[in-house]
Image (cartoon, rainbow, N blue to C red; front, side, top):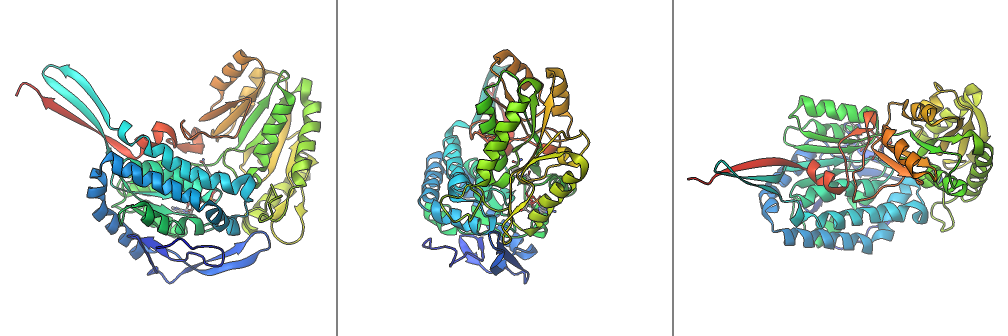
Length: 488
Ligand code: NAD
């Protein structure tokens, strides 16, 4: 099967058992381009119960041999798959862009290559994540093995279609599981297009499958008795539903990567320009549709005025780069769709009526498509919804603070706990604050970033479990203890 997908040749069918097949479900997905709201397609398959069952049956058949495949053979397949993604990254990024609107240079390339890198990184672990053995004690030798779970699934959001898929698929497959990917109903194309690359890399039929679908498809997966693990990235509300479905079905393992409202704390002694650059980039990458975006910025009184001036200037510069996501010069594309546009502008309009002072932005750009200015409110009260809720657009709140104690209390006064950033040149203060943040990740003199080699995830309602690093492999395995009677 040759990879020849493009915006004029979209993948529209489910990828089951290494073949494209039509869904047994008569419902179809309808998708629009966020740059002009033009129809992209209205005939994309959605997996229903029969399709989910077919994929699970194929995965169950493939699992015994895949699990036993040599480390080298599995690694070679994963490396080849990574290379194939890189070879086709421009086309894959375009397939995401036509419904997400993320420009290639500022986001599309990064998130597509993240998928390839995740495969490389996890392939490198295959022969290093076998388990442990313990010294003989009382005549017993003990071996603990990390065993694959069987049929596993990843349910992903729209804001990083291939990146979020790779963070789940790669550790699942590296540890010997079969994996079913369910992309978001808003961004199915890049995932569906992986079929020829899966075949060419050498994944046997049933090992790596893609089921496009909506929340109904997702719930069929999360409540299925024969799926042993769901790794989910998306909203808190859906994450809770998935955990409930897992508990009510077969107690499948669950990893949840959910929302955020991450603070960036800038002390008087910070490198001002560095703090401005990181916080402005964090707010505008992927038009603010990033779970770990720093959307609450707190600046100490001594440099507050200068920060306000610099942050506003940086965001006005970013606003000049808003435009057609297909143009090379564009840094900020549109929000993904009308629903997201209405949600973000709703927060902005309510924010304008008394929740804070509008510093910059606050308006739509153009009258077609879903473009919006980077928007900042200052002097926002602690209970205002623009400071307590995840907006998932380029909207931040900027407040001043006096003391370290005060700012830790404010930073942690939220149900979220994904990321936090602290900007200071005092290393003791930086480490003190970093250890007091109630969050899964902390940046010192940086914010809103991730690394494949270290755990990624949140505390409190930002999630459960971790992706990336060794933690991701752990999350797709169960430990088995084998006790050997050496006296026998
Ligand atoms: P969403 O929860 O609406 O949807 C995510 C996925 O879940 C989609 O594939 C959807 O089809 C599926 N789904 C919906 N209802 C379901 C159900 N009842 N059972 C099973 N699956 C179901 O989220 P979204 O709007 O696509 O994504 C935005 C959210 O994702 C934001 O809150 C953002 O912060 C979060 N996010 C978190 C991370 C992270 O790593 N922490 C990364 C990216 C996005």
